[in-house]
Image 1 (cartoon, rainbow, N blue to C red):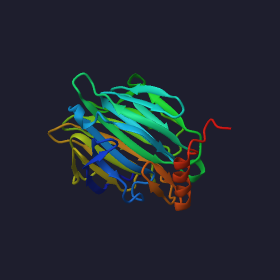
Image 2: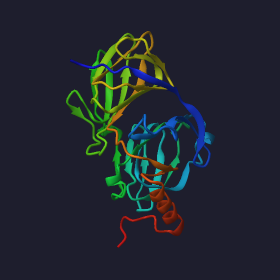
Image 3: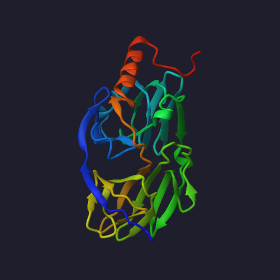
Length: 287
């Protein structure tokens, strides 16, 4: 017998400044890490004014986490301490595993109309993989499958599986699902979820009822954190909805966090910060 997920909490995003003055909407982050475990932070960026984002995110370190950047419009030019260079364009995803440490920069450029829209999600790494070698997975929009999930409804499958179709991001430790779902008006869609995993839905266009009883109306710019279960139902009324559906396996480990460095203990965090100060932060590629 199925166990439908209900809404545990609804959270409104909040405006914030990050990097060298980039205007963002922070959906969650730098708070109670337990309820979103294994996820740490979700930022929603969006503007048609380059002044809101053009200064970007100059060189900065990451360790112990994965950062997932999904661009809806515009482009982000990136580079790192391993010599990688590239551009993430509209519809593209970059899944970066910082592992033992990487220093990189992300510089938004916008599209021809000046639009820069998308998301960045941070996922934690378990203690046993905190110091793994860094790696990148750059996924082009054309490589992300889109499947039908209901009458007129569709899902872009970045990670996880829907109806037998798997996303291109695989072999991730937290076993995530990352979907971009669009549902037309007057339609209900039920999607499977893994029991025991953390699940949240983030509508960024329109609104929808989330849960089997249609009591929880969640509007754009609000996140619905769900209770446990093995499926989730999303139903629209008179307007369509587009939302992220993200799930992952909790780690149930302590978190010691300072900016983009996330370890398990304060001692480990102190070592990481000292290594960054003295120039020994980068481990990969050194003898």
